[in-house]
Length: 136
Image 1 (spheres, rainbow, N blue to C red):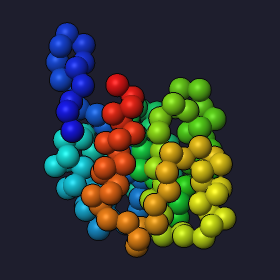
Image 2: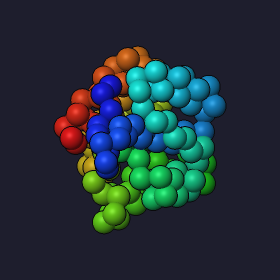
Image 3: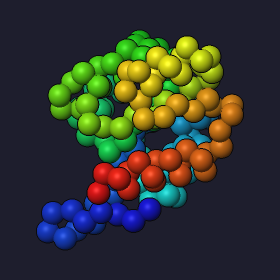
Image 4: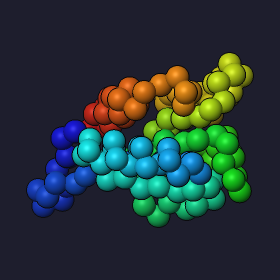
């Protein structure tokens, strides 16, 4: 990942926020995204995730759907209906693999939908790279 040029010519790392309550999953993605050159932020529930979307202004959100305190569908709805956050791309990473879940996630504005047990980390990083390269 190539950092974009920030103000005054300084390199600015792109920020990726993962909202997931699984500590092992967060560690895997923290390691992989950090090695890919991203500034990695995490949240363990839907409410904390929404706060971090607003306060940390990530460039992309990786979102689980089965979250404590506020589920991922509700988090996605709030991100996409808020005028200050609706431009942030969201990729769903969930254990829910039903066609109806995928359709709902995409209808709510997700860029993509991956089922955790069926995708490798490298494919997710590749998708993140692709989406963020379009933002430059």
